[in-house]
Length: 384
Ligand code: PMP
Ligand code: GLN
Image 1 (spheres, rainbow, N blue to C red):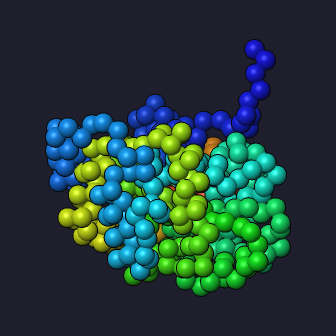
Image 2 (image 1 turned 90 degrees about the vertical axis):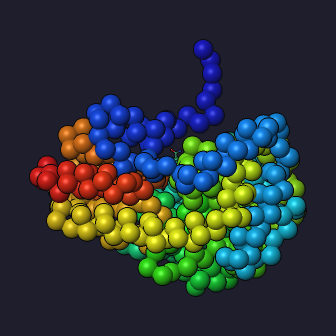
């Protein structure tokens, strides 16, 4: 068949590959990022309630008003951002849809899009499909901070979009308020927009606060800010997310959203709206909930051959395995899964030009028993 692939260099995502490998080998799956515990019981009951009550037909294309109202209220309460629920909030089928649609909204052939490596794997294919060129800048290890000098040197008249992710997957780093100030100052004078992937907004630790672009008026004016209920409510399979953007950008975003998915599962939108309204403590307690898991995992791993620097955010933990093995990370992750019985994600796959660092990513969004079992296996492993 004479068929020209639009994404010739893209295979199956590492998350699917590693979860399948974990299943094939009966390994504990600390690779793909999802909890092995249930969403809150009251939230499950609300989905059932709304489903049984007949909320089963198309909801409004932009999302039900009750949910958009709650998203605006949460943004005001947490980030002091006044958001118009009718013109600035769009509910999407997961953050993935929001990212894809935002990229299609802004990027045209000839445009450049800056991403920071290691970069979440959904960004570049969407840029390619829009006809844009992805420009990769590395984050600076060991803290994986933004390199503003390189950003300044890279910006040009073709730069259309900068994709940001904080808290950061896979590194677990978070932006500071100073980072946002610098970002505004470096990009001033360019016709560049921002796409802020903030799906881990409620997972920031050690008393730090999430520096949402919503807090920063100058950046917010030209930003699509994306989040997801999947992470916050332990329900990654529900695929409900949202995008906040100024009215002119939201209007263009909606032109595309209406033809990608049109809308998102109705009873789940109602349930999330009511739960957000009646249980704000859920997301307020989330940093404490996940910090305890991070700390447990770090403590359990203290006697292992891995070197961990506790994550500042997300439910991921990077681990340096250079004391254990000289294998490249993709091979090492496969070895861990097959021979040790714990699946992890190799970090090099998130780079255009992978550095030599020997890092894997573990997900600690797991029951404490799972973390104990996994760490026990990892602590007993000998160097290979
Ligand atoms: N962005 C990042 C950084 C993620 O880790 C994920 C993970 N799942 C997503 C976006 C996608 O979110 P969703 O499942 O809501 O589509
Ligand atoms: N975001 C999840 C992770 O980083 C995976 C999402 C997916 O499998 N598409 O593990």
